[in-house]
Length: 492
Image 1 (cartoon, rainbow, N blue to C red):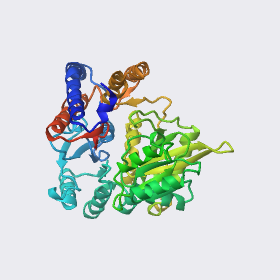
Image 2 (image 1 turned 90 degrees about the vertical axis):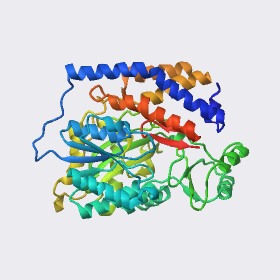
Image 3 (image 1 turned 120 degrees about the vertical axis):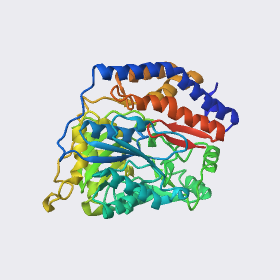
Image 4 (image 1 turned 180 degrees about the horizontal axis):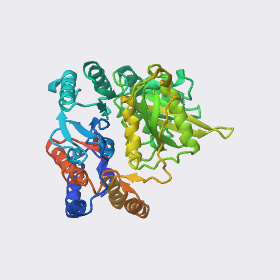
């Protein structure tokens, strides 16, 4: 069957996609169940190393949101292994039950309503629910693993929690989140602090977009186009469509499908030739406490950290320090994730172009898995007294994992479809896809499966996603792509 059918809006494509993935889950169910049972039996007979036993005064209660995501689950597991008590929370999502709900790392778990849903109480109801959990469980620290659409709402909730409880909140201030979340504000701030910025132009209509393309036809430059508030293309910068396109009609056809308006402006951004890198940075009171950088891959589902002393890693760390120093008077607290294009200058020096910054956790946090104590120490530093001479970005030690020895991470479900099944359907890149799939299967580590905590993996692929696909069949909801790492769905 041609691959084009998978991206079609037709009823035939809709039924084929959902039924085929449900059947695929059923096909692997016996194998997955055997692996699950063997893992549980193995833990009974030969347990994995236990979590650390900390004295009561050092053991903290940490609340982590978004257990449905790989990054939320990874953080929960790290805090559990480091000896702390973990409370998990998720936003209610229709009929699907989060796979993180069944993690051994959790001491308690709650489902609360979304802050962006007025029908369920909105922001006020969300904040009240968080406060109730914090008081009931005596939470010391809330680590926000924010959803892409609720980052600012989490920051607003964090402000109230800081005022009404003794719980510390690992989240930037609302205004900082707005600046970093919206690409035009981010680029403006980046230029203001003297960092390299690609040429960036905002458009608020399709006609304006076409006029910009026409004006740049003889410039020799190429540009990408992306939504200001939310990335609608879950692929690296280098894989996006470039404008001006050689065929003008294709540009018009592409632009005509985009929801560009005054309320939903889009950005043209100069295309910089060079690889893209992403980072996960833990910042406490203006100090970098943990950092990891890695190459971006399509579609950000494969992670291999940079070597600790590589030129790229050191340059990215310096960029992060400089940027953090410019925010909240140098006293920022939060998880900051940069997207950076790197090109070689005429003098051979690397030139870094920050193109986006998300004020929330990044999937690259899985690269800290082999160092749970160090990662948790970075977050828990927020609970330590802050002395005047220790404030600022240069006074604290920043932990960077030794990625020459670290695992490489992938998601089995994603690779099974994109590297195995789709090449077979299309009849292209079959050998290459199979080779990469089996390399990941035998040499890399799945980001969800752990023998000591196997249920989340089993639930994700045999309950969560089949339930979602079945609901799509019943409701008629069309989707173009799903992200198994974040459970994010890109609807048509």
